[in-house]
Length: 282
Ligand code: UDP
Image (tube, protein in one colour):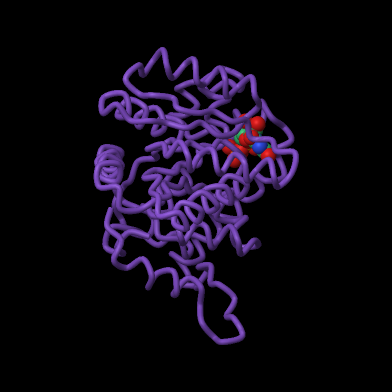
């Protein structure tokens, strides 16, 4: 996690106040310095509410090197807690910005996730739009067994890309990023940028349409998604729940932050993670 003065606490998760441009500068530095395998992570209200019930996801969130507000709800909460207005940084747009940067700096990129057809289409699109970037590997996001996963991990370690985009659903992609970072550490390698991009390969290839600009302006992306993919309805119940938790904290000063359950030894994984990453620089 980046230093606390550069973040705002959103229900226990320290979200970066960096602008899109500054995140790109951080990414450039990560690739140039090659000190760590960094996790650039999108935060949205659905992920926050899910993490409150699934400790592993919460652990991934606090272990991320940079958390950015991918959805309006998070930017709104940051504004509620700080009094300063922050823009939403859509993950799909940030991914394209990073590709532009990768093209300029001739970086190598590995695409992991989505169906085979979609990841192939994403590769073609990236090669056309960002010709300076080298797409050094692709792999769909569906695995037969553990051996299949291990073989993909080995491929990534052999290729050593500068950037890995992991396009899977929440938690699956964060588990993958954790595996990539752990494997890299074990082999004294660095994969400088690991970014979970969810359904972004589907979005850029047109497999799942993106909301029109006017809906984005009115922060109605969730409504568009609901019409497109009604199976998402249950998880959207997290949106009012998130808003209530934010307002309860702000107005009634109730501690609605997420706290890790104390372990038998009384140590708090969030605190442990905070301490171990205090030296981390963006
Ligand atoms: N996906 C995948 N492997 C899986 C599950 C999902 O590659 O085991 C892909 C899926 O094909 C889709 C992408 O993950 O392209 C995003 O899924 P979803 O829209 O559920 O993610 P969200 O953006 O909502 O987190």
